[in-house]
Every structure is written in structure tokens, then in C-alpha cells.
Length: 223
Image (cartoon, rainbow, N blue to C red; front, side, top):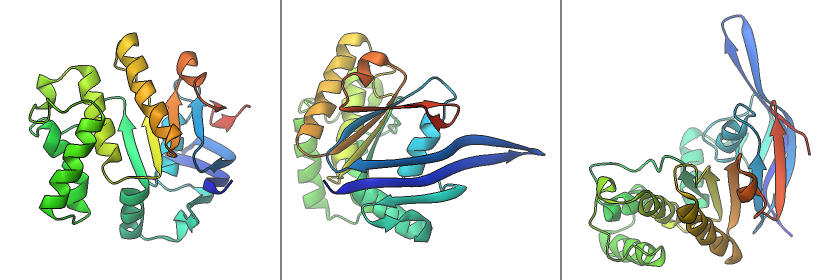
């Protein structure tokens, strides 16, 4: 099976005054296209930094990350932005929706950055919102939606560019258990359709749904 993401001896550290904080250390991992993996670990283990690395939101201090055949360290910031926009869909615990925009406009925003014409943009946005069960909520702003509905908007926004990889950082963290199960079912169905799904979590019940679990502790893979 072809690799989607390869991390080769990746480390990340930050200088804080005279002190060097090692957040990730010597991470090597091969993620195949269409896999569903969970990155699990306690708070402070380096999970979110790990996600930022593979999502090309940050660069490693050492080592290499290969995303769909592209070595991220060789790309400019503009090239990274284009790759990120086309290949990766992000789903965050806090939804990260723009409060002043409707569900429709929040979802269509990434298409604007990809210079998609309005007619096509509107058609794609409508189809994606219907797909996540929000056909009747397209004109509602985030404050008018439940937590589960806001997360569905966030998933729709992640899907609107038809990315190959979905990165979900604690996607059920702000939801009740029933709604959380519905959101995970939606993400799992996307994985069954061929999307590579990577879920960052500290929740055992979420991790058990994955085909493979990567445990992080103190910035290192433990198993």
C-alpha cells in the first residue's frame, strides 16, 4: 500500500531563554493511504505538535516529513499553503468557525482561497453540507447551532476541497458522548470511502475505533 505520510527521525524543540524544550524526539512513522490511526497520549505528550508537523503548519527542528511524495522541508511557505489546502482537511476540538459567518460561508471559505468560481463553489458547499446532515441549517451562524452541528460544519469545511487526509484534533472533546459517537461515525465513514484519517486523542474509547494506535509519551513513541 502506498504511503501517505512518512516521518523520518523527526524532532521538534523550542528555545525558552537558555532552556531547550524537547517536544518531539526521534519520531519515525509510515502512514499508508486510507489508514485510520489514532495518536494517543496524555496532555503534554506532544500530540498537537505532532499534528502541526504532519499538517505542514510547523516545520521540524530535525528530520524529514514526506507528504504524498513531497519533502516538506524543500517547499516554500506558499507551496506549503497550496499543498495543505489541497491535501489536508483539519478538524479541531474548538471548531474554529468564524462567528460572523453562516455555516454555508464558513464551509465555502477554503474554496475562495483556491480561486474556485462562485457557481461551482456554491454547488460544492451545498452538497457537502447536505452530506453531513445540515441541509436545513446552512444559513445559521455558529451561535445558533448546537455543539454537534458546529462540529459537522467544521467537518464539512475540512471536506470541501476533497482532501486525501483528514487530521482531527480531539474532535469529540467538547461534545457529549452521544453526539461524539455520531461525529466519530461520520469520520469513520469517510475513512471507509478512502480518506486517510488521523485522530489525535487522549480518549481510550476513541482510540479503540482506529485500526492502529500510536502512543506518545514525553514526545516519544512508546508503542
